[in-house]
Image 1: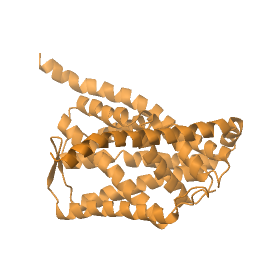
Image 2 (image 1 turned 30 degrees about the vertical axis):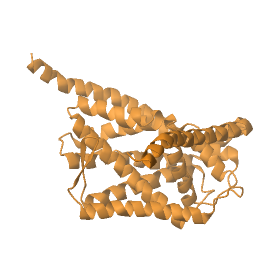
Image 3 (image 1 turned 90 degrees about the vertical axis):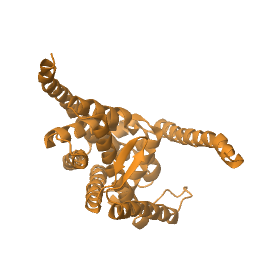
Image 4 (image 1 turned 135 degrees about the horizontal axis):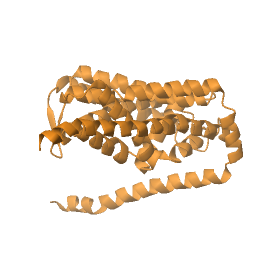
Length: 322
């Protein structure tokens, strides 16, 4: 190994840790700064003042988003050719997504899928391929929606921020190029198997890639619509969607379950110069109720029912093995 390579290996882990902890410190500073100046009584008043039509519209879009996301694992079923029914697959995906939002990806998106799918008879290799394809679908749409939002409708940043719209346009164009590269790969290398840590990932066809793109873009757009309705149109939809996409990445990077506080900090930092802070936080807390807590209650019940069904399916096999 060359001296340059050894040098890189010695400083790179430390630089990466410093960057991660620096980001954590920035988020913590934003959270503390905002919490100290918030009038929480005004926030509660803002929640109570939300019109019923905004809550109903937000709830309807949240339900549509969950229904759409629950079909992601059906794409994985098509790829792996496993035989679980459509309702079963959508149920597992819904449960995993709800727990993923509230408890983090390792507990929800990963652990719950492995637990439920294995109880329903799928092998670890099949579960890994389904999970990987679902995650790929989700983030492929993110690339396109974020790329389009940043490139064509760059958000209006607070006056004190040093980042201009041109920097956002460059970032957006980069994200779109990455998504385009995936589509080109699917068109030219269909069926090629990539090996990642012992698992084979088969490149889907171009038609499947377009379907992934359409489904995920629609889902991210629906999530943005939930918050836009709760904000009662005080901010342009494209800007609300762009801020949501920034908050989504911030939540992933910080590994905070449910992005608790991170989502609010990003929205306050980017939109408080346009929307009164109490109204903004009231809308975001209502969003958490509609998109996080209510689905979690349904998913908890669904999890218990799925476990009971899995036990019933396994019982004949256990008796037959005696």
